Image 1 (cartoon, rainbow, N blue to C red):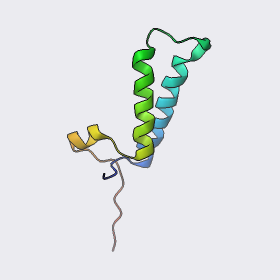
Image 2: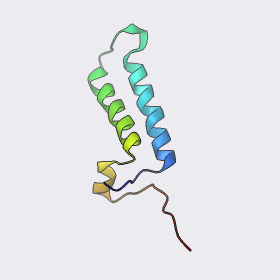
Image 3: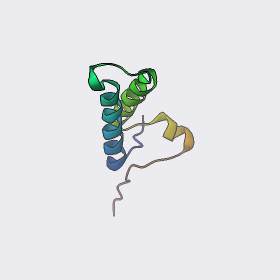
Image 4: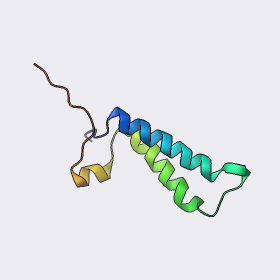
Length: 70
C-alpha cells in the first residue's frame, strides 16, 4: 500500500472527521443524519491514520510530498 496523503490532507481529514462525529453526538442524542455522518467521519479518520485513500488511487491523485535525493 503506497501512501498518497500529505500532512495537510491528513490534518484536514482528522479535523473534519472529528467534527462530524461530534455533531452526531451533540446534545447527548443522535440526530437523524447519524447514519451518514458517523461512517463518513470514521472513514476520514481511518484514511488519515493510514495515510492512504483508495479513492485517490482510483483517480490518480497524490498529495504526499515526494522526497528527492540529489
